[in-house]
Image 1 (cartoon, protein in one colour):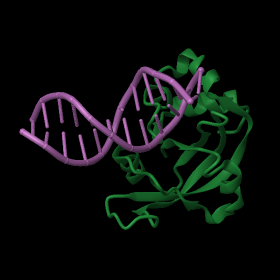
Image 2: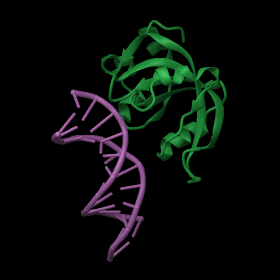
Image 3: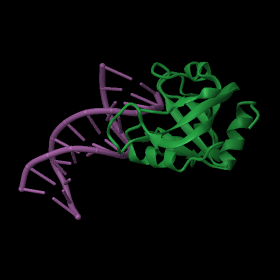
Length: 139
DNA sequence: GCCAACGTTGGC
DNA sequence: GCCAACGTTGGC
């Protein structure tokens, strides 16, 4: 199983919106960036991801699971853009902020910081474990 | 609201 | 294929 990070501006699609979709999940659509798309194409059913609020909040607030592999993005006719479906698994007991992540020497290489504009990014198993621990949340 | 980082576009 | 211009993202 692999780990990922999904970024969303809470004004557009928040953790609460995601939770409201329940186990049916929802398309992670609207991605118009090749690297982010390629990451989604590599995802498998059951892969886990952090749900990060960009802009407002700037924190990891929950864990999602991939429940449909890559398929055409329904919000565009442009065949270049694919997306996966994700469903909420559990919220973070304590959200982990970007500031905390930046202050952690163990997390200095995390894609979230190194490539701050990449909206769908890989997370290593170590990073997953460390961040879950920081958030007092079961991995 | 500003600006740095970075991705994309299009002329040559 | 290079690179200038431009647009977007996202932290501050």
